Length: 179
Image (cartoon, rainbow, N blue to C red; front, side, top):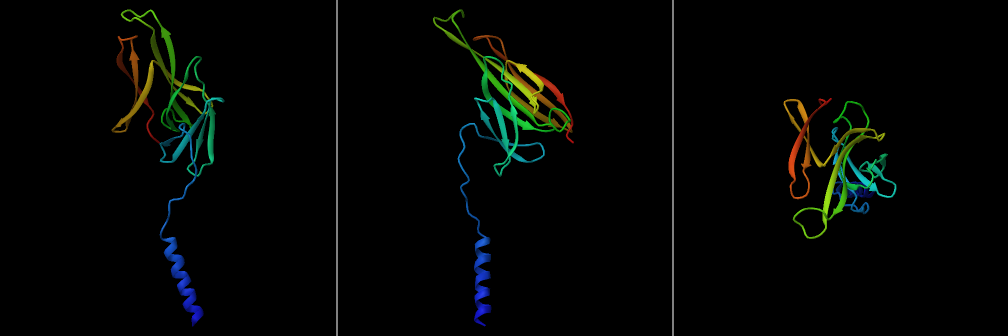
């Protein structure tokens, strides 16, 4: 009888401890860590390796899903990874990555200034996992995807003009339907 009582108490204790989860520390990442929800609902996170110009995309269990080389334009640096997806910008199964780059120009010939002026030039790039360019938008560092009644559009926000005479412009692209 004591054995049955002991087994019952052990099972009760085991059941009680399994019902209450705890927060478990898994590690620390640097500031290049960024999370994304893919178009299929999966959560991934990315880390940029500046010296190798690669982006590693990880699963939530910290295993590498894919690593791709980022073609950064000459004289530019990575500004931000905007999105990762698979079937947003085209219908193949290759991963797509949207990112912006920035280039700084120091000039002293801008009218109305007494010193140097830093002109900032952005480039928005969308590539596939092979590094093939899907879209390149000069003077842009932001995008948005909107959808209504099954119709999807890609909005590219551009900086038009130079110096203090800049204004905004939005380019609109149609993109494939969701599968």
